Figure 1 (cartoon, rainbow, N blue to C red):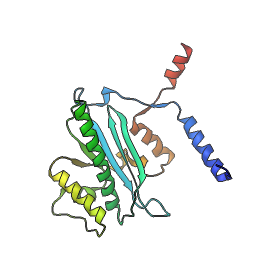
Figure 2 (cartoon, helix red, strand yellow):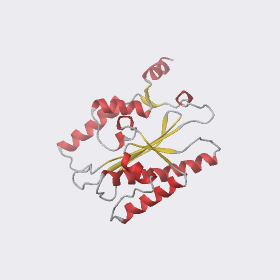
Figure 3 (cartoon, one colour):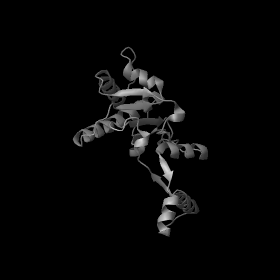
Figure 4 (cartoon, helix red, strand yellow):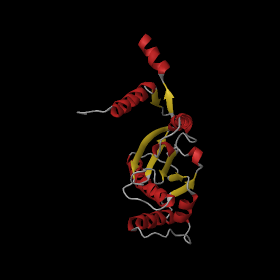
Length: 207
């Protein structure tokens, strides 16, 4: 702030351009996106980009929860520890998203919002097999990874949590884990449920 370089100024200008170009995008919630008008669908996904940070080789993770077609909770962060495989990175992302999903389940219970199921979507089939198949276990010497693994296996075995596979091109959390190309970013905007409300603002200004 006291001695910005040309690189800092260019980065700030890029952010300003992005905010200006997306100023008409808004989150839209609608019952039309739910298969059941009484019991709406809760869409939850978690993803990780393995060793994405080139300086530390830490992975980045993110999750997205959508209700009535719009985001209600999202997260993006660098993982605190270096993982040794994409499976470990995905496992950590799933575990962190699961604890947040449990918070929402308690909240929905308090406000008496009934949902048919609570499940997380994941695009890594090996991770899903590890937490759902008793005969398969992740071999790791990292204690914190092993704790997350056993907790996830326990919750899935007790049927308190469902993990389902989704293809990478439909993974809504992908945009929270890495930088996207222009085409993928436009798809990510649609996956978030963002809509252009320019016409509404222009109509209100005329009135």
